Length: 274
Image 1 (spheres, helix red, strand yellow):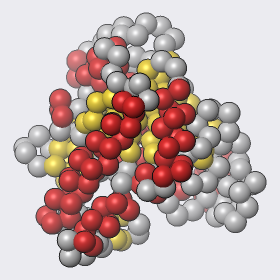
Image 2 (image 1 turned 180 degrees about the vertical axis):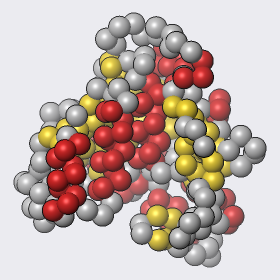
Image 3 (image 1 turned 30 degrees about the vertical axis):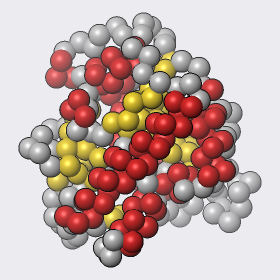
Image 4 (image 1 turned 90 degrees about the vertical axis):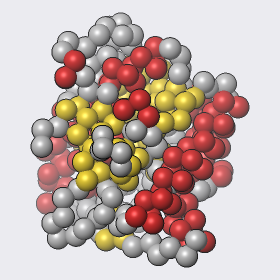
């Protein structure tokens, strides 16, 4: 299936924002959403970022908690959630409702005119259900298209989109979709309009040479560095797809990607992917 990211199907991108206008896209993981101290500071710092910005969030831990309260088993394979019909109902409620609207309300309290969206809203993000290979992940979506023109129009209207990790297939089905991936493809879709900085915030100060030493941050990573670090085992596990998403964004026109602590999103700390 051909992947269409951004406004390729519309022809030449509109000159929204003008030349050289910056945009900050921040992805915050579910672990931060569950940590009140870190979340409060992150939202305060995000609100203080000047100019246009987008927030993309996870919420997996909250979804697991709610599923347990409803008597629904959470199943994971290689760190990825199996999303059957019952779990799809849970993640739709939690991601698109509970977490998303709480973040929107708190940003409004900081003076940010936020708008909560899933991929189905305004047809922002379309995806297809992941094909079954070794594992049937259920109602999990792989992204086909992000409408960068619609997102840019919202930004130009002074609105800060808050995207939940839910997409749709165009035939009426919501699909659970990795938030890191949504952040990457949204950044790539908006790159024709803005100078985009994408920030992945999580529990560590950056990509570490030694997973047990928070002072061992790797300051810069290129594609060649990444290949070498994967080969020697420095980078492994869940960090591999995160950096792959970051590199894909840079290779598709995103100015830079920063991986850093949720409490250090000022762009001066962490690992820069470029």
